[in-house]
Each structure stands twice: as structure tokens, then as C-alpha cells.
Picture 1 (cartoon, rainbow, N blue to C red):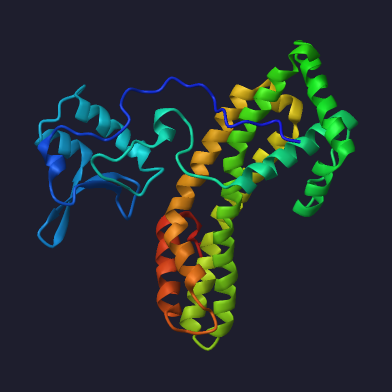
Picture 2 (cartoon, rainbow, N blue to C red):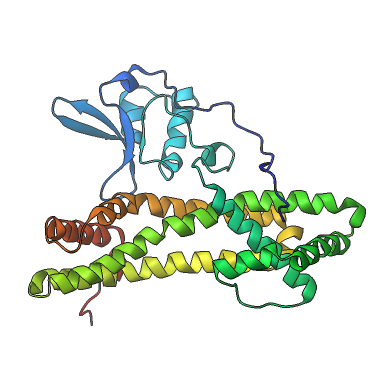
Length: 321
């Protein structure tokens, strides 16, 4: 059963849609914005010979006469939040839709949406049956969602929700429309679950690398520290996914409080997406790394250690009293 369309929430859009600056400084060679490597502070970069020069946004405004309330000032206020969704911003780039209207600016695949549809179908059927069983594995979930009896129970669930909301079964389309909207939003969470699998693949390959490099005590200790530093953020990501899964299972509350739930889904989506962007380069490098050979492995281990030590220093307390 599909109760979904591609309609998203109706949101008033801002008139500005891209980073079209007026000041000539933004025409300088290599002009772009990015977060500082050792922090999330947004900086403006320009090419100065063979080097990149960086300016804080406050200094940029001051030295180049960008006045408060001007178009350039308005755009600069949108740079910090936009850098949570893209690694670089060049003058003329589109402003991420997350900043403009809350919608995701990145693509998902058909199977992400199909998985959410199946989950909601089963959740509707189980709600009308009064059961709260654990979420089945994907293969079992597919069989359950395609079962004619489950489909009929899901339809009955839609009628029951309409009654619970006081709108009557004649207005069941309102429930369907709400489920469509929620599925659009939850599909991005489903996609992120898949993408975050890359971090788990890094953890697995680090364990394999420790076996390959068993004779190198220094590197093995470094791998151990990496895995220690990775544990807290990985637990946090898993917790966020589990909490949203629990929200989606409570189908009546999900539909009755859809606006609040969409806000929660989007905040979590953006939090996870921002975290994933930081990991992406490492995920690609580890996916390409062949563990059976030491070629490039030592350098990648050290790069990974620098990354986790920089981004997750709160876990760095070995031997502390």
C-alpha cells in the first residue's frame, strides 16, 4: 500500500535564493566560504598567489564596507547555517533549501521512500490490532507490508485515526495527506541510516587493520585510540535514529501532531546530515582502502586519528585521574 505523494509542507519562501553578492571583493580569485579546519567558524577565503587568505566574517564586513541591512549583509548572515549543509559556498551558489524553507537539498533514492511506506503500513496495521512487536528485518517487513490482510488493516487504521481526530471517515483523505507528508520527511532519515553505514564500515576496517598491523605497536595503539574516540559519536547517531524510529511507531501521535513531528524530523535530519558531511571524505577513503595490503594504510590511520581527535576531543581522557 502506498498512501504517499511527493507533496511537501507548504512553507513561505524567502525572496533570496542564491548567494549573489554585490561587493567586488566576492569577484576575487578563489573566493569562497568554508568552515575553519580546526573549528566550525565560517571564514571567507580568497587566493593570494599560491596561498589562500582567510577573513572572519566580521572583518570582511568591516574592511569592505558591508553595511548592516544590505543584501550582502543579509547573505553573510546565511553563510554560517548554510555551511552545515555544504562544505563550500562560492558566490553565485544556490542557498541550501534547508535554510530557505526547511526542505532537504540533497537527493534520496526510491528504495528509501519504499522502506518508510512499508514501515508506516505495518505500523498502521499493528496499531489497529493493538500489537507493539519489535520492528522486523527488511525482508520480513516487505512480506508483511505486501500481505493483503495487513493492507486492509492499514486502511482500517486510517479510518480509525480519522475518527480519533474527530474529522470522521469521510475526511480520511486528510489522514492520507498527512501520512504522505510524513513519509517525505522520514525518507531522508532512512537515507541517512544507509549513509551512516559508512562510519560503521570504517570501524570494521580499523579492526581488520589492527590485525594486519599487529607487529606495529605504535599504529595498533593509535587504532585503539581512534576506536575509543569514535564510540561516543557513533552511540549518539544510533540514539537519534532509535528515537525517531520510536516516534514513527506511535502512529496516532505521529499523525495528530504532524507539524511538531515534522519539525523534530527536520532538526534531527539536519543534525545528522551536518555530522555526515564531516565524515564523508574519510568514508570514501576507507571504502577505497584495501585492508589486505599495507599500501596507504598507515597514512589513512593517522589521518583518521587526526580527524577524530579534532572533532571529538571530549572522549580524549585516557589515564585521567
